[in-house]
Length: 100
Image 1 (cartoon, rainbow, N blue to C red):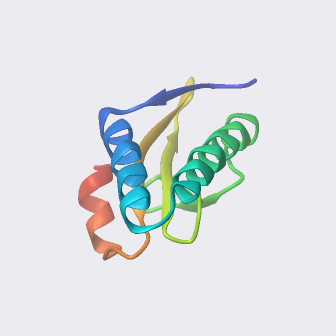
Image 2 (image 1 turned 45 degrees about the horizontal axis):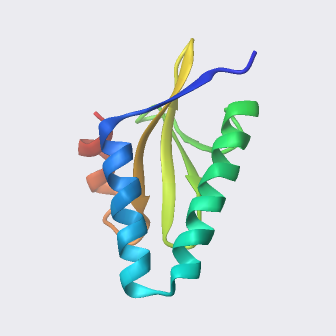
């Protein structure tokens, strides 16, 4: 059964922030690739929710979008919640406070 995808407010904000970051630090092509890769990853998650690495202590999955940004999501019984777009250069300890 394909589960519906639900974006949290934090996910929407960090998605937009990621696009802004990529456009300011790199070429527009990078932000376009980010958007395209995000759509592809979400399709993969929809079809195969367990496809990406799981952090059992936080009950989240982390799907890489590119070298610097990963999509953080959680599988629920009836849906998949996109929680956050994580900059991989951040301190991993910070992720705990974001997803709880």
